[in-house]
Image (cartoon, rainbow, N blue to C red; front, side, top):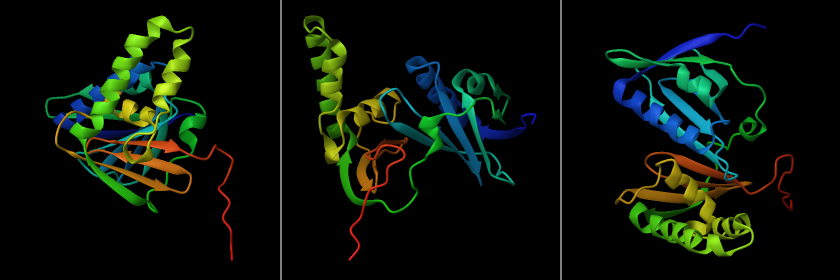
Amino acid sequence: MMPTATQVALPVHEGRLLTAHLDRLSSWDDTGCVRLIARGQALGIYSAPPMGVLAFAALPLSNPVSESVDVVMSLPAARSALKVTADEVVLDLVEAAGATPALSVLPPSDGWHLPIQGVAGDVISPVNESIAEFKSRAPYVVDPQVLADDLWNRPTFGGLPMRVLHAACRLGFLVDDASRVTACTTSGWKRFTTVRGQIFLRTVPPGQRPLRVVH
């Protein structure tokens, strides 16, 4: 079957945000993919940064789409599919990548509970401290990856492992300001929400379902 393309447009400012987001992902792992979902008047961007997490950002479209579109594109293909005009940024949504297990199962949109509220400027401090600790200790350990795993698995805000907050920083979701952030949980997932995007962590491996005792 030949691939089909659907064109969506974003306001210039939102298009620049999309470009910056794709560039951050590419600079981290240029072999990665994004799952792009256009629905109504919004474009959702899912990605799987190399930290064992899922990232999500949403941007408004210039005009609503008549039918929902859900495609997976490599980062280079998504970046090259952006076309800038005088008053908007156009994106051709083309199914340009094969199966991507990390993006095949998306987190639920509802059922989240136990929200813990915080301020970005307070939450980011432990991340900066962990980065500084890694840089200072890495030259003196046999395997820096073991040190990194230890640091990124440490529990932090809302019981989230540090890797979640680190990913949020790398992608520009978490910055040192007074904006609100939230940590939530649901069956099999944890979520970190900022005003710029979300980071999800699976707490149950793919293919396994949490067991519940039924009375």
